[in-house]
Image (cartoon, rainbow, N blue to C red; front, side, top):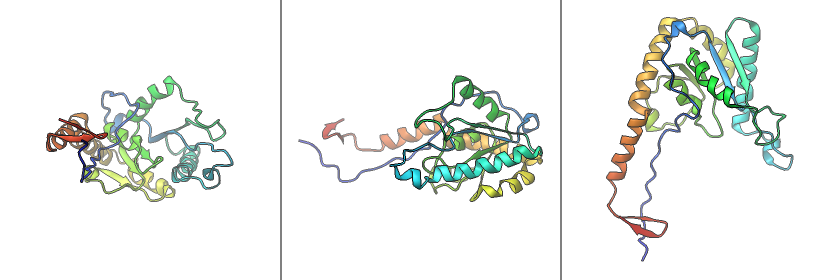
Amino acid sequence: KAQVVKHLRMLRIPLGYQSQQLLPQKPMAQRTLDTFFAGDIATRFPRNNYRYWIPPSKTITRRQLWHVLDDLRRSGEWHIQLNDLRPEDARPKHSTANATDYQSYSERMMNSRICVAPRGSNWESYRFYEGLRAGCLVFTSPFRNESFLRGAPVITVDSWSKLPGLLRRYAPDIDTLERYRLASLAWWKEHCSEPVIARHLAEQLNSEPSRISFAGREIS
């Protein structure tokens, strides 16, 4: 006889990083890029899909960021690299990224003083966590008030049109950037690193009753 589960408990954990290598840390004074962006700008949808006519939030946000970054790069004032891994004229689900792109991604992140982390398909993005893990100062789209994100040493940007002013304020200030680097690394280690998440999950799972119901079957 299947056990009736009256209370469903959901555990939320950080999205984490994706294709990021763990590289030796670089102090801010040794980093040569002000910022860089490599990622999907938009996915091409067929005309019979509503997202062809009404772009999702990810596409709107990233198009705005791309145009701002491209203008800043062309100005010659900043050291910025851009790489669209899925051009808008590509076939659906087709990416131009290759192994070299992902290998160099970690190196460029470690060589960047500032990580721009626009939202993805939902409010979270891998880049948010990858920037913190690399010790960057993270500029991010607004995010949810999750307990595991409280106190994160990041700067929230409600419109990427404000990026030029933020770069002028932070990018030349190596001392402030170095403080953010140390704060980002400490926050990652204390809140989102693999041992911390594993310990949190173990504590939560061990606090549950010894018998639970899974797919209609009672297990111990």
